[in-house]
Image (cartoon, rainbow, N blue to C red; front, side, top):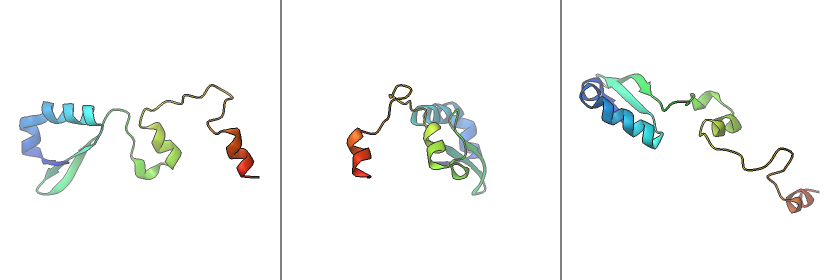
Length: 80
């Protein structure tokens, strides 16, 4: 979502809540050019990260226990 600086000034709390709830960044523009990007807390520029590093920024958690694989034994056997 893009929003002008003037509109952001009038609706800043609403926009901040939207970013917080949706997790999607908002670009704030002046005369049609992006001057700043409002990202949710903990977000990192994803274009500089490897795919597995991008997954970390979503705040997901691994449900496997330490030493436990997320793959099934059959998956390993299929690769042999």
